[in-house]
Image (cartoon, rainbow, N blue to C red; front, side, top):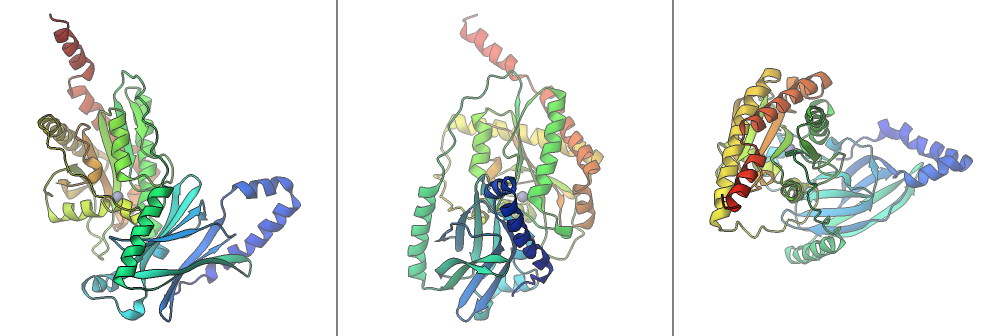
Length: 435
Ligand SMILES: [Zn+2]
């Protein structure tokens, strides 16, 4: 299970050179203090009953390790670390081994870690998340010097169900206490322009789908979102807001809150998918809207996968208190879904001019991020990172600009055909004036 680190050894030797340089030059030293330490390699291994997850790093950092349940995870919170490690290094073993594990209990020799992730949580904060195969306890988390570097190691051992449950409750409390207070509710800036929220999926510790040629969903969708934002801003008709503009984790709930807080007129979530199976002939873009019942099994699978984003990032999932049963809210939700459907159809027509669509390009399912009752919301899956042609397209700046221009056109069309909100507001004002 140990992954080769030999290819990265020259980089490890560079740490020593960097330290020497820092000592020689005070300016470099100041920079070294502010730059987050670099991590260059990660591996997990089984030693007897214990499973160890180790990161080779430039220097030790303060850590806080705890357990979470449903699903079972071990989380290590750290100050910001610059992870120069392929996210695929921590991904679950590829099929068919992985599919076997889904149907049969894990072999006792397989260890306690099924897969792991690492990355930025927020500015100044990083996180490591390990998916566990069963109840475990944290034996230790320690950082020790090794030649030319340090090694941060999380050691896990099997535990009982009841001890694990108690530990996950403590972990959830610990995370809740450490959580940053929610951003203040600022009033939306007065703007006569409609607000369009662009939502690049995933980010930070949650990489999203991993594909061919080291394609990573979180980076591909951020590049696309920026290209789309640039096109929309150039037209001058909208106030464009991004849910994230860099590599950080944003919860699904926060994404919809941003849109609702700003009275957004449209919410466009950008994603890319990947299939684990070897059938790489599945390709092309798909446009999703929210529905109570999924349009098909594939849509249900993708929604389930996308809805796991918070859990992947090592967040304790709090149960939703459920939908409020309110007639006005219900009417608003229905009207919003109708608008979303209109935009989704038009988006497909425009998008296919620049890009290939999936053979079934309009689908719906219960995407959490599309559930704002009062903001028309659409999720665009740009393509499949498991398909070579899609990866070539999605990573090409030329394709990106052309495809983003088509999305911008679809957005222009959506607003041109809608009754301008200003007119509706004026109508209301006239009526309330008693005319
Ligand atoms: Zn996604």
